[in-house]
Image (cartoon, rainbow, N blue to C red; front, side):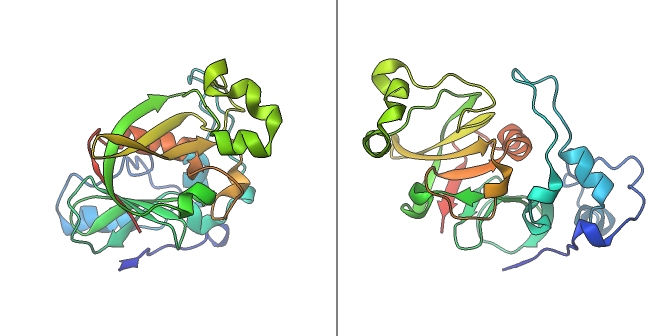
Length: 227
């Protein structure tokens, strides 16, 4: 289904591609073979440092990601991806801990994710019903029952204010089905060590720099497939 044409950044010290718009935005608007190959070219350590650098202009300034805390295969990259899904569709692969944003010419933008218990409990077809920057977090009643100290963040108490310690991170993408919120989310996380792992709670968590990148690319009402 996919071929990532990747290599661990720790094994390469090649010079950063001069003027590489792919690092920040992708080279997927052109259809030439050269552009396609450029999009698939392996990234260097310096490329990744740039992609996951600090973001001081955010509402809550984000620190740079410690790349040593994330397996290189879970860092953002463009990959070959054969699918019948249309361009702009999000595909959540819960088995392999990836989210794919389908792009043109047999390519997709791939992000590593961490999955909480809720992330394994739902599958099917849905769509992006809502997007939010620096969202408020409201723990579900079941979580509050297990951990009463979270009651201060209940719906009745207004939830947890946005910030660097908020479990939803910098952005949240809300998954709807038949105009109903499934309570399933793709969201940022301050805990980058959880990427590529099964964790105790939450839905689909992403590095904050990655959820910001995805948030800007995915449209409201975009189709979502969870497998």
